Image (cartoon, rainbow, N blue to C red; front, side, top):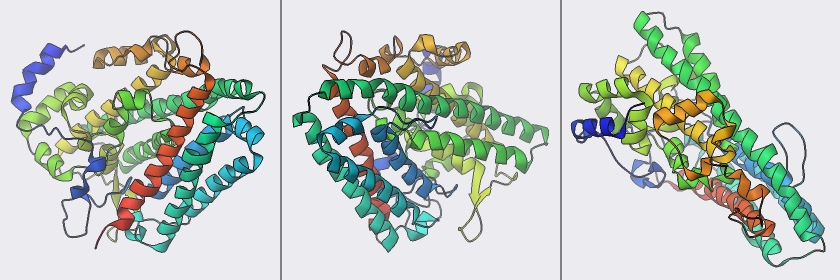
Length: 406
């Protein structure tokens, strides 16, 4: 395990070349307008995998899973929908219809999204998701705070355990498992490059696992409160666009790349800005676009430099670390594999959440030790998470590119 003292010894060396900047989600200056080859191609998620539309739809599926109790194992469980249905059956039907309509309207958008973002299909999708957001932040939230039925407490209490154990935890576990595989594959890419045995199938394997981990992540975005927000895991692994200008400068800095190779994910996770980390950093190194920009391809084995693959291995390792950390925060440190616990210890990642797990707060809402005074307050947090991601999908992920000027 490398100590914080060891880290600090490198800090002076890399200070001039390390780029500390806030989440690129709010950096409008990085919006691609077509006239700067060194800017990222968008203010758009997953532009090289051409996975943007699926990302948006999976965000809404995250809401669907939470609201309806749809488990990742295919089961349908007790959920907040049961209370809304008991209180106002028409409202429950409206929410379910708005979810389905949002997914349908998003999936009508064609890839590549950077070329269709300003079109009518995108506006239709934005409108549909805004309807959903309005229901969630309006009538649904109001039904929780002021509505009442005879068995309100029982219905909401019954929704908490399946919310945690059928939706949240399986989603984060799947994401962490795939991120672990991705890190192994990206390390192997560097090793095979050095051995001159790297094949396109090696890179394709990493692409497939990236897509699998990415799907779990996007289906988690209805519960970005708690550990994902408090420990900045969300911006750490999912800021966009990629800071390509800063990346090129860093890759050309031999001293800094030597440090990255020596310290890997621990270094990049501590010293690089969010725009150089996470899913989008890995994506850029393993996917590429066809000459016309309309098809996503596995990256060729011809990289500009070895430094690119040193960087790839390091950011994939950091992504693995953050995914495991997020899972551990929800389930508690005693409920993760020993190998994962060792990874977190080596990366010096830990928090009070890991003592018994953030999930405790929901399953035990209203009981000693929970941050929620009752199940209603926990349900309000859950619905706020759903409304927040609906707003982000409509007005940032789709809305910002849609409103960009030529």
